[in-house]
Image (cartoon, rainbow, N blue to C red):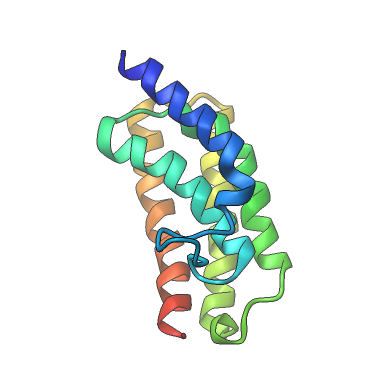
Length: 137
């Protein structure tokens, strides 16, 4: 039953992602105001929370390639002035590297425990960029 609900939530997320990526949790406000980072955030939420809360890796296994593209979009975009620091540029590059590592693990069908640990590291790296950008506001 849990898998059915997760699949339904995942399908709803995929349908809503383009609009949702522009919106934050605060009633239509951008999460950070950097659309590429906000888009990555939506993918991170869709993959990280199932791993953290239920140990469910199916969303990550499905979305890993999109996460790589979204991470690359971050470093290929123009950051808002408040996010345009050398430290955050480096954090973006590291996010791409770590996202690619996780995607490679997914592709190679890494065991669940190792993949979950890699997601912890990826989530921590994402938060460096996200929180750094928010604090810059």
